[in-house]
Each structure stands twice: as structure tokens, then as C-alpha cells.
Length: 145
Ligand code: UDP
Ligand code: MG
Image (cartoon, rainbow, N blue to C red; front, side):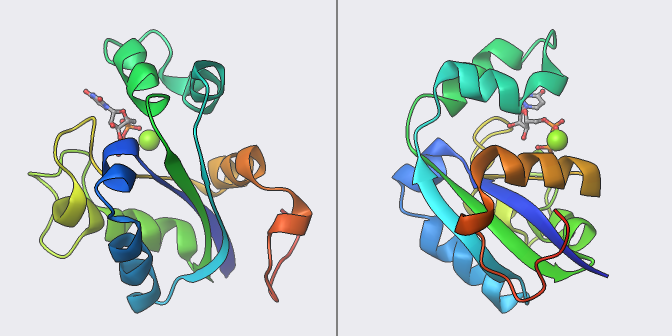
């Protein structure tokens, strides 16, 4: 089934000019880029985006980090997009991510692990909506998201 998912390029990866490598890895693995923007999150936006982690030990640090500098939001499309993207992104800890994954390639620490990727179809829909309006998403397969 054709699905959409959301990639977020985290601050250190954007700042160290890894956006191109990340887009290239997505393209090489048959993900179509249907939306892309760079933006600096406010702390309020970061809190809303990561609300499921509220109360966890790392939450406040993560919010501070994610709102510290420019990020990029990328909406991608592919068959089985959500699961395939998580596979390409790799484990949360870049040192445990397999060779060839995005996090192994551009990640530095568990927090600064290069990218975020939606973890299920429902969250992908919400996260895409967080960043993009209908007009900003271009897709021939664009369905009911
Ligand atoms: N994170 C962290 N410390 C932890 C666990 C997670 O800083 O102990 C950060 C990390 O950047 C991760 C994000 O919080 O990408 C969201 O955590 P999650 O468990 O959802 O991992 P993901 O889905 O990103 O692999
Ligand atoms: Mg997650």
C-alpha cells in the first residue's frame, strides 16, 4: 500500500550539512520526496511534536535540543513507507544502528541521532499534518491524509 511518512532532520545533522546525504539516501531507497521545508521549532512546537515522551527522563533535554537550531521536515512516499523508513533510519542509538542506515551514517549520540521517523501510520498522518498543509504536499498518490 502506498503510504506517506515524516522524516525530521535534527539540528546537528542540518547544521553539519547532512541534509543532502539524507535526501540522497531516501531517494536511493525509492522514497519519493513529496514535501520538504527547513524551519526552527519553538520550544512549544517541540513539546507538541514529542508530547508522547512527556515525563520521561530525557524529555526536557530533547525539547531544548530540538528547538536549539534549524531542522528540516521531509514528507516521503513509498509502498510500505512507514516500516521501510524505520528500517532505513535504523536503531535509536547510532552506534547500534546497522551499517548503511541513516542514523549509523549521520548520527552522533542517542539524542543527536540525525533524524526522526514516524513510528506508525497514525502518527505519520499526525506528524505530516504538523508541518505541511495540503497545498505544500505534492503527490500523484496523495490520498486521504
Ligand atoms: N532519546 C534520548 N534519550 C533516550 C531515548 C530517546 O535523547 O534515552 C531521544 C532520541 O533522540 C530519540 C527521541 O528521543 O530519537 C525519541 O525517542 P524514541 O524512543 O521515540 O526513539 P526513536 O523513535 O526516535 O527511535
Ligand atoms: Mg519514536
